[in-house]
Length: 223
Image 1 (spheres, rainbow, N blue to C red):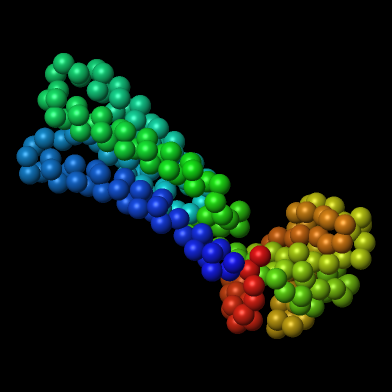
Image 2: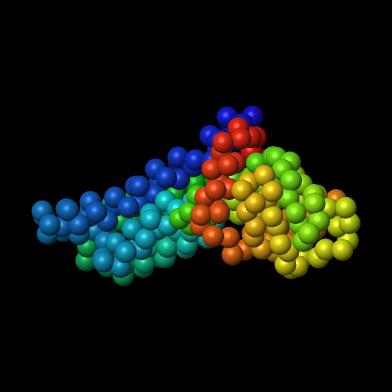
C-alpha cells in the first residue's frame, strides 16, 4: 500500500502535459525566427507558457490557475481564428485549431487527475510537502503531558482527555520532549472526541528542519 501511495504522489501525466504547453510558444518563436511566420500572438505565448508553468507546481490553486490560463488561451485563439478566417493561411488556421484541441484535452486530463491524492492540502507551492506520519511521541500541550497520534513538521493530531474544552482557533503551546525539547505555538484547526488537530505557527526554520529530519529517521508509515 505504501508503494502505491508514493507512486500516486507524482502526477507524471500532468507534468508531461505542462512540458508540452511550455514548449509550444518556444517552438513557435523559433519557427518565427527562421521563417518569419508565427502561429500565435505574444498574448497567446504568455498564456500558454504561464499555464505550463502553473501545472508544473503541484498545488490545487496553481492547477486551477493553469486551467484558467488554458481557457483564456483557447478563447483568445478561437476569437482570432473567427476574426481572421478569410485572411490567414489555411495551414496556420489548422495549426491553431489543433493546438486549441490539444489544450482542451490537457484541461480535461488535469481535471481528471484532481480526484487523485496528488494535491495534498499540506503541499506548499514551492516548499516540500508536510508529509504526516503515524507516531505516538510525548508532547506537553499547554502544560499537560499527552502524546501525538500522527505528526508532520507543519502540524499534528494530539490525544486529549477532554476535547470539549478546545475549539477551532484556540492558540496552544506544544513541546516535544523527545525531539530536543522543541517548543512552538499551534492553532487548533479541528476538534474530535478524543483528539485535536493543530497547525504549528511561528516555528523557526531550524526547528522545522529538525522535525523533518527526526521524522525521516524513524522509518514511520505515512498517513
